Amino acid sequence: MTTIADRVRQARLAAGLSQTALAGDSFSPSYISLIEAGRREPTDSALSVLAERLGSTVEYLKHGDDGPNEARARLEIDYAKLDLSAGEPAGARARIAAIDLASVTNAVRVDALMTLARAHEALGDLEAAVAILEPLLDDARARTHNLDSAAVATGLVASYLEAGDMHRAVEVGERVLGELEAAGMSGTDEHLRLASTVLWAYVERGDLLYATHRAAELVRQAEALGSPRGRGSVYWNAALVAEQRRDYPLAQRYTERALALLGEGEMGRDLPRLRLNYAWLLLRSEPAEPHEALRQLDRALPDLLAIGSEIELSRVDVERSRAHLVLGDVEIAETSAREALRRLGDQPRLETAVAQLALGDALHAREDVAGAARAYRWAADMLGMMSATRQSAAAWRELGDRFLGHGDVAGAAHAFDRALREAGFRPTVPATLREAWTAAAG
Image 1 (spheres, rainbow, N blue to C red):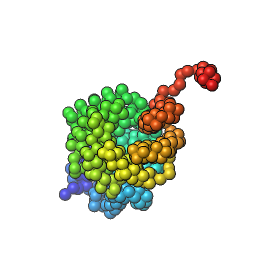
Image 2: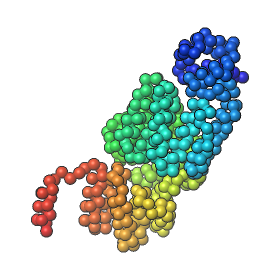
Image 3: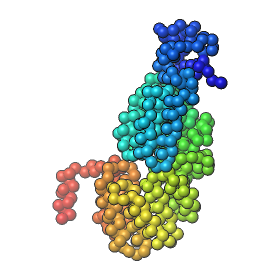
Image 4: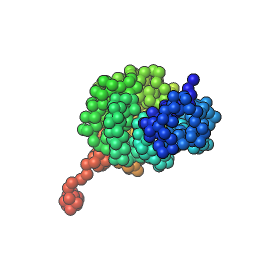
């Protein structure tokens, strides 16, 4: 049976404190030693001082996980996580808000706040998620709780990525990675997961050369030290880096390795999302593999229907449309593209523009040239409303290819120009010279 002595000692070691540091000015180190040896029963007032220094509570030190506040809080957190898995973030947020975080241990408090941040992120309130995670990370770093720091930093980097603040994402991630490595935690799942998330921030920032170098470095480290889950995470993100470099064969090999490591027993959204990405790659390999792509989509769909978002489901529809188009099933291709658009609604999203491209391709295959042109123009209008990213640059490039195929040279030139601009390549010809060329052409 775990006793007060055991819990005090475990909490002290987890906090990285010596017996002298825990004693402070209130007790003698020998008194702490006697408590941990089970030879002294501390009073409630003494436990109150110890609990504050240990980031714990009197209830936990006396009763452990069986204490009423602790048990009730853990139960509510578990229910909140189930709400998130079921696609009900508002319910998760309400559950966490009802917990008295002042009456629970620091470990439970961190778990609750991390879950609350995930709920805010799922609701699209990234500012609220960051407002929770930034002080939580500062507290974990101040306590030198490296596992908490890694988990919080991974969530914070992901939030900054989603918000488009790549520089802050890299800054936060690299700082915590340095602390983990100094603490001898290189190659642990926590280290590899954070490093993989930071890797994607480099890709989004346009540092593809460095991202490629880091991806290869992480693969070597994961193979030497990582667990199957940690290695799977690294291979997945390395595949995304290769994909951005248009090295589809390498991206496919890395994705296959990640699928083998994560395995069929993996819970949550990671495995179905990985299958969706694999289908995307299969349709862009030479030659394309539409049958295998459809098989991967069929295997991903049940999990995504249960715990995925409408955006992820729309991506399934788009890739299904492309696979059927390659197979010559034009009607199914059109139906799938329209289903993706139905899911996405009227919001200006990159996914909506991509779905319009898929619809245009299906209509063109049906020889509905006018309908295809309308879909491509709609995609162009949608892209024009969005901020520049590498993904939007790629979409503009795809659109330019389609305009060129339709003989719309002016539209193709405009689309290719937008692709270059959004990839960071701006015009360098002086404005006066461009005006002179325009006048001469006129």
